[in-house]
Image (cartoon, rainbow, N blue to C red; front, side, top):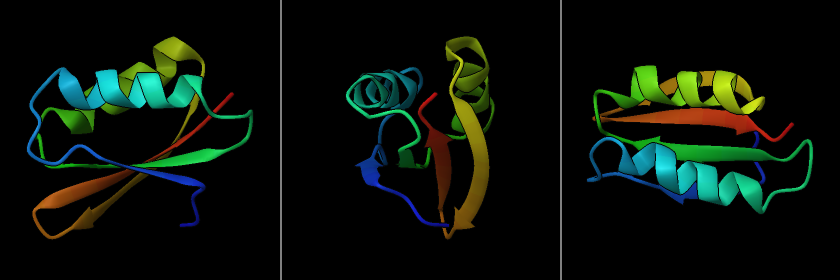
Length: 75
């Protein structure tokens, strides 16, 4: 999946991956896509929930070894 910005949150535990993603999303232009790399097991639930609450679009997740690649689109 293509993306405009990348955020490496590997090694961080809940709620830090979502908090860092939220901060990064505020700086994006509408329509831009953020790829969030995370290895916190809670991120699989937390990231889609953040998108639903914030109005941004959750485009999905891909597995990458021990990590997850989450794709978020700015509303």
